Image 1: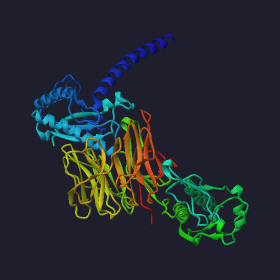
Image 2 (image 1 turned 180 degrees about the horizontal axis):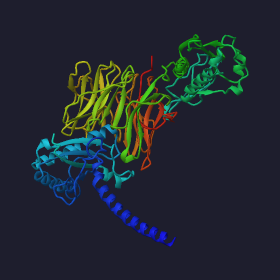
Image 3 (image 1 turned 90 degrees about the vertical axis):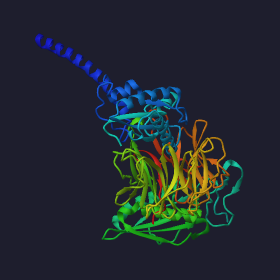
Length: 178
Length: 440
């Protein structure tokens, strides 16, 4: 009985450790795949293996360290100063790692009608694409898609969430040039 | 003799008029908000064969639900009836119906033949005129089409009393929604106008948006992300077969609608961030660009005569409604109120345009005359969007979405007068309704 209890405790401890490791892994995975949820396909498919975020040549590095997204003002597609900083870094990365191509997603918050927001998302995606091209990224490496208000990341209905949803997201993938 | 007692309240609360000329025929005038619904009796239809008993009960219930659902009629329940109708051809006891203040009486009979064919007869009576209103009619069909037959009976009653076309024998194509707001699955679905007989037309593998019926109700236009990019598709409803239209790399297409003859599709195309309006000839595939402004032009809708197109544009700096010739050419702005206007839809009667309006953080469904005059808002909520006209141009269905994480979408209908706001009983969360024409 006692031996049994001891064994139990040991197993518990191991479980705790493995649970802890799993949580770490999940958090890591979550951070990697979250933006990819809104990547190619139906806005739910990912770009597959993003690689290790520590590897500067990985899509994960682009996402987390370079920064894959920029934000817009209400009903605007003008790039802010902060957006331009991010896009400069994106352009430099794309110029260095030429095996990657990019799809730029344009998104809108829910304060607009479906069709208009599709057009607004197209405008935002295009603003990002045009800036990247103006920084020297070849036009045939970048495509755009608009999701309008169909794929919010934040789901509250106030400005804190809306500001996160009015975004342009650059999703990179290797060897997938158009 | 005063035949109809309802009072009419002219919209916007301006004037009050008598409902009907005294001594005139049984009639509801829908233009105005009816304050007092018309009381009618619809005793359970007579089952003329034993197998017809349940059908008779069900058909009567749907006829009553259709009429009561308009907000223009009130049923006097069977428990209050004095006269009992046991035979379709027995004489009407007008005094008994007057005694309970039934102004209209609907009688019917259902029989089912050995081969399963169903026959439904009905008559409508103007009780205070001691006379039938129109002649008796009968509909034949298979037993499983009983709902459609019931809708056809109700359409006849509605039409004879209001003088308007009916709308009950119609369908609605819509987007069935499931899942959380940040990962919503959407499927194309179709149902009867009252939410019955709903069925899916696509699975949830690709995001689909904003379906529209063809003028005959046999085809549906919609937008799908099947390829990863929004593109417009044409689906045959019976076979559920579909094909991509206007698929051109580097462009996105959306917001499609049919021309009134069903031969042309008008839609929006985005290229290089700019969205303009195009038409596509379905037979030849020929495409024509109708607008060339650097602003957003979307949400196009044909006038019923096919000569003009109304659309939304932010060329003035905010979204407003414009009308242009169907062949393109100089658009004329028609909306001038405060707020942003979008999703314009021309009424099938040609007299009005319904739209979505955003103002001061609220969304409204509204209507205006085709020159932009007499704007009136019919609804208000956190998010009302995407009006679609009933085939008779008297009722509008739209989407209402709640706020926040739990905000789901549902379909609602409202009279063009702003009365009778009702939730449509759809089996799932739903958005983007589009009403079919009256079925044949």
